[in-house]
Length: 145
Image 1 (cartoon, rainbow, N blue to C red):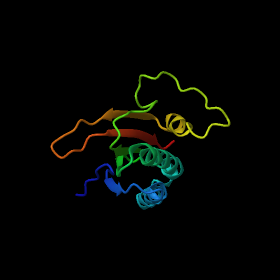
Image 2: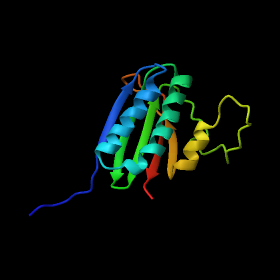
Image 3: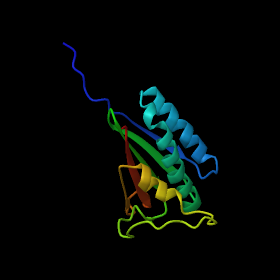
């Protein structure tokens, strides 16, 4: 007798503090989702991973870790750890609704995109531990329609 269990898997990718990290993360996400038959999530997942990894690069000044986790055959959780403990809106859950960004602004749209495309998101600070980790973890979930 063959038993079938839900398709769950997880991948982690350590990213250096390098401007190419977002591109490497996007390529990895597309390859993983294609390999697992979840191509319907590839475009929004690439966009959100790119935003989270770019924010880690711009604001943390060190390495970051990307983790992809399949929650079931239709849902994906993306999380990014970095060394900066400051949790930006909308992940802080205290900032209220996001405001529109002026057309001529240099930034500020990325996390709005996360709140638009993700079905759930959050963030929490990671206290310093024995190994000197700390910083924060931002996560978001995507679901196939």
